[in-house]
Image 1: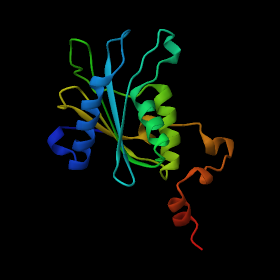
Image 2: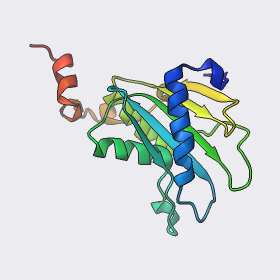
Image 3: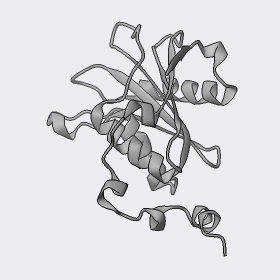
Image 4: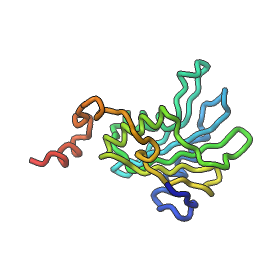
Length: 168
């Protein structure tokens, strides 16, 4: 894990972080007033975003990272190169990076398995002056997932990925 500035991350990551920053303003957050945006970069260079959506039944709340994964899956994307996450409070900017919760880390781990094992994560403070560059593996050591249950996830990969992994 390393801390970078916006100027020192790849342009692809800058675009991803800007997309996450823009979408955070669409948060439905009447309880926490915490605005979170997430953006995933697919293998085909599409960007899929998500934001937090809260519920009076707090357990039904969905985080931005999970919303982005579900939105991507709905569009047929299950493999990712990168994730960006950014947040702000109702009246205050976050001075530290916005880091995924445990539930999000679990889903990110499973998305990483579908993506070939890992992908990079850009976790930013509101002003984008402090960006933690890490990977899903670093965020979620000692994971439990499909491979722990000896589940074959190959059938869930896009057809072109299956062909690349199983050449005739």
